Length: 509
Image 1 (cartoon, rainbow, N blue to C red):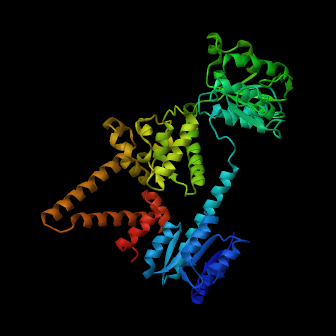
Image 2: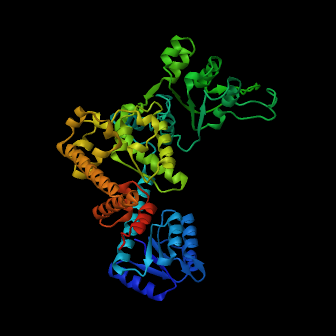
């Protein structure tokens, strides 16, 4: 594990933290100013950085910004005096893990650094897992069949026809077939035959000679030439114009073709992988797809299942896409609750994996908190049936012997309001008890608000709101043993919000 770096111009602060962390068996390296830290980052990176805000020769806020720019996953704790709370807000906006007020209690400082250390290690493990993620994910039996087929074809260059709905990942399969084939060192060239106008498709596939048509000012190599020695992926082959199918058949038969406007035959050593969402047998019967080309392509057929046929893969795919979106956008990855995943799992996803990826990208941008709940999902998923009404075998992980905490979450989740009394009867007894308990505290709230209002007490809204927020945060901190980040995640709020609320409500006292 890498050392913890302490940056402070106050020698006493450095001394105290060095000794305290050394007693915990943690390696420490100290600096007196931000300039030395930035110079040291060229050769090494700390596990956690603890920095003061105001130092001669540089600001801790500026240091935070520069560190986050080059090392966005680094956990940074900003030390500040009570008079610097505005700076602390800036620190959070800059991505600080937490702030440490001065003067601080040494055990609390060590505990805070420990939490940052745990978060840093967790992020490192997560990054390693993401780096090890295979090019395709899937535990469903249908996907395991696809993986086995790719494995069997790994030593072959035979033509493959991939069928499956739009967005199911056909190009990923084509990439995998190429990557695990004897032609892996050759080029992989893809073309969507449905996305290119008919007049241009012939030139795209076979190239053209200079002067072959208006605008052809130079000779151009087509995709067959570009893919020589490798793999050519022809996506949406079922939509290829009929007259071009004849030329494609000729290439597949003897490897020869002519550029548009050319007179010399060209040869290309290419493995062809084709894909379509169409039923090619029906297209042949309709007379819009050549039967001989169909048989030429249909040497090995690989069917890719729709996402609704592999629902057990939705949670893993959703988490992966949330991590991927966060990395692309340069933000902290959001977490997703079991209730939201259950609702996702029971959605049909007509756009398949591509639609799921787009939804995760939308959630990364639009979900209001770091924890995504069922109510945060986009409208098309809100209209699906409540996961609680699904067969117990499908959501057994969510309803079998729940803890009191899980039952309470189930009772107040967005979907629970739609449960009928029949559905409520199907829930475990503890869940029904939690629902009754919720009604009890609401009754107490009504009684207290009625008493205050009738007595003419001023500021009833603020009084009850402060009490409500204070109790929520106090309970969450008690459950998480004082870990603010985890408490914020459980509450579904941001870490900046919980820190601000703790200050406003005086919960630090």
